[in-house]
Amino acid sequence: MSQQAIAAVINLYSVAIDSHSWDLFDEIFAPDVELDYCHVLRWSDLASFKRDFAETHEATKGHQHFLGVPQIAVEGECAWALTYGRFNLFRQTPAADPFDMSEGGAWYDDELTLTQAGWRITKRTARNFWWRGTLPEQGPYPMIVDSFPELARTGQIGFINALRRLGVSAAVREPAE
Image (cartoon, rainbow, N blue to C red; front, side, top):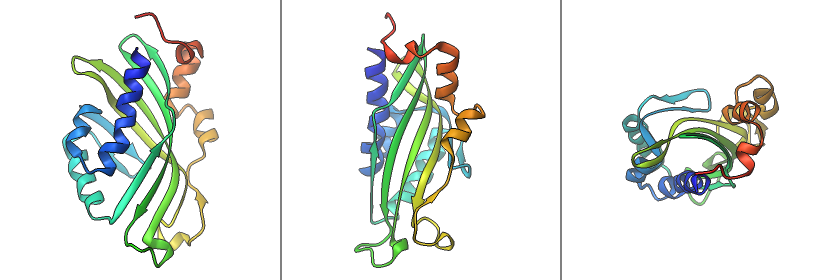
């Protein structure tokens, strides 16, 4: 049951962000959540994250976030999840220039805690496998941004660290409730 509830919390993110329903972030993140998006955007509370994300995303013409099936490991009232994703973001429509649209592949490395309100993300690290159209100086072609294997090898992926500590069975079967 925990893994299904955690997956529902994680999957709500796409709906919340793409519909600009910033109030739904309260159902996803803890009030004191720590967020690190792509090494440069960091927040240590939900209120400032909601404010900044609303400002950034309301300024676009549209966007769509796709999430894959989260891989989840649970230990009591703590959990770790790794979710692959893909995004498309339109700055202008129709996109007449390569930089009118940004797209990429990413992953979310989440830590969750079971609260009285249900599972909430308490720490999120978001990284990009690749992107295109994000920064004009990078040109119009896709480029690798972060090396997933290197970050995993150096202990920087919380979910991988949890698997190594807890064993793969923590992610394969639902623990006894």
